[in-house]
Image 1: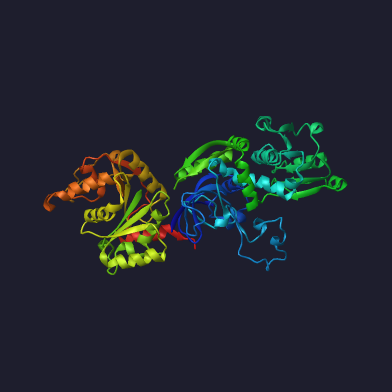
Image 2: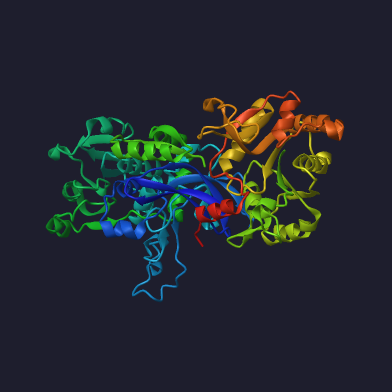
Length: 346
Length: 235
């Protein structure tokens, strides 16, 4: 089957590809997409040259929902709206690795080095049609609109809760470092998924004002930062180390700190205090299918959905490659909390 | 109901191939006509497909439809001597199963790179206008010559478009146009190269859906070469 796609061939250069694709799984037409920071790093060429050479040409974008075009198995019906999960497990029994991640039930296929993740080591969703394993598709309930495109980000928040055992522990209070979209979504998941009181620590007053469902703190008011036993860092970049060290300072002994931000450089952290307090530090960014299911469940809560909808800054219909460039240019210049969504039309 | 009609009755004389018409040539192991049908097969707005081809190729077509698990083809009709006859045969093939307000999307089998957008836009325009042609703006200057030797005129480019397919209609509109046309004695029927010509002659208004340069028609060997070089295999 002939399918068109946009692929990045070098930084700031997209080409139209027409490919003859396999159709042995479920055919889905990507409809709404959202660009994430990883896509922008590829677009701007902010990865080392050899990495880019190895990955390009590649279709970008891994946050998306689509419409089922055909499922010969009959599990999905034509026209059904689905969340597309961007990871695909490797056909591998683990025997070739020193340790197989599948032996740890808290890790998922997403941690297997042989697995594929879209817009990373496999084509993303910027395609007219994708051929995807039905187990990586989740139906979208009718009450959820195009905001379902945030299911991937929400799943990352759910993953942090799952990995830290917070769904079971149900802490009364959680502190989240980060006033960006990831911090916002993690804080929302904590508020509506756990029913916890949420503290958000950030540096941008305007963005913090949008966290109406949480108590907010400026990271510079060091003496005022709240103390909790569950902390989540969603800062990333060059301020990672500051945020992690503040979390270490603020976390009660025996508490857990979940690291969700991608640090710009190696982050120097106060391990002495980690040892002194007996803290657990846990890395969590890669969600699995159960996290996506939880994300969709959360999206059915009207108050939660309303807060997610607040992130949608508009919808851009992308029906030619010039508009595709425009949305990447806009996204790469944006510093706002929310995102513009792409409606993809091939 | 939205019904796609795929016209695959051509002989492909301009391709120079002697054993098969162009729409049955393989591209990456699959006949062109199947690539084209698949574009409609996977469109969630298309309910059924009618394919028109010559009798001698109908068995091959049936085998391919089974082989490639095409499920929406409900009718296979005979090709006529002309494009108009083929379209009429398609309308006759489906006539017992359609209602007047159903939408008929007529497409050349030799345009395998049709996009989902074009199909959907055709359907939407028919809902507004009752009929729709797929066009792309003329980018080169178009020259008019009557004798093929001398330049007659240069029409204003901004008013010129190149016609592609699909051409889509409410069933009642295209049916009336064809009935009117074929009610004329054969020697009085005006020469038409497409379905929109007939519908326009019947007085209907026709909207335009924006086509795509990639939705090119495979007419010559050079076109086949172009299509093959555009398509990359990801298998």
